[in-house]
Amino acid sequence: MPPWLGPGSAPVRGGWHERRATNAFVANAFVANAFVSGYDGAMTAHPTAPRSRRERPAKPALTREGIIATTVELMRAEGLERVTMRRLAKELDTGPASLYVYVRNMAELHAAVLDELLGEVDLSPAGADGDWHDRLVRILTSYTSVLFEYPGLAQSALVARLFGKHYLNLVEALLALLDEGGIEPDRAAWLIDLLLQFATATAAEHAHRTPGDTPQSEDDWRALASVVRGVSPRTHPHIAALGPRLLSGSPQDRLAWGFDVLLAGARHTPLPEVLSSSPADFPEDPAVASEASEPSEASEAKSRVDLGD
Image 1 (cartoon, rainbow, N blue to C red):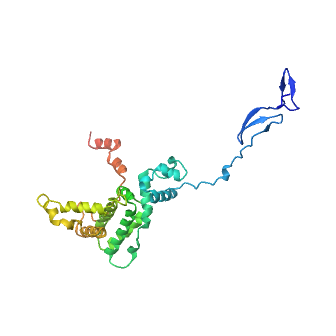
Image 2: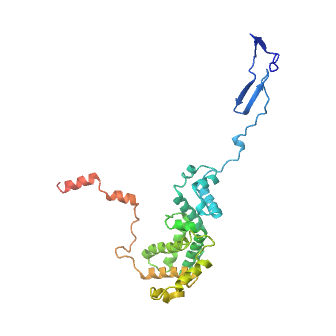
Image 3: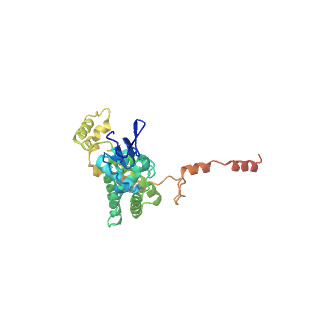
């Protein structure tokens, strides 16, 4: 009797017939593939115990707030240029497609991240005592400083459409100070855009520069000064005449002076006469306005009837 047959096997026509299957590989969802030998079907390999999904740590639920917070962490650790949907999805242990449920594209994500960082802007001067002008410049300087820390994001801010809570708080604080300073409302409405554009552009200027290659670096500064000193009075008389004054002043002084120029200009420069001094109707969505401007077939037909066509 072959050794792999037990006492319960019986010979049939020159062979052996088993009451139970033997000498076979078996596969089961709960054990590893095992070789079955012997009458009683005992497994010679030790099965690997499965791990229930319930025993694994649950992933935190994916939320817009969580996506933004993780993006900020990655940006601070690796830089904005390294933050992609694929990289972000890996960090959140999900697929890139899942992120688009919460943010439509990278531009919207950048805008959301920027608004989150605007929460760091110091708005306390808005409610403090003192000259309204100085307090306004302090808030704008704080805003610029935040963008200086993330210059890549500042470049995105030049084209982003911001409407988050922190951005609205910033605009509200600035408008309150402009009102306190006696700037006419219609001018303040336009001035707020210029002030933030100037601050944002100043920070965005450094977007593609590394910490060792800033406008204030020794090599850049010396090269620029050398060019200015070497300008010919014959070909560039005004540059030659101003010379060192073109490069004078600290970045902080230049920034504050720029704000002063915009504020003084707004105080003495009226808006175009075509604009009414009264509040205008809230502008419609461009797509809706475009559709509204196109005459419908019914209105065209009515016009033809009225005109006797």
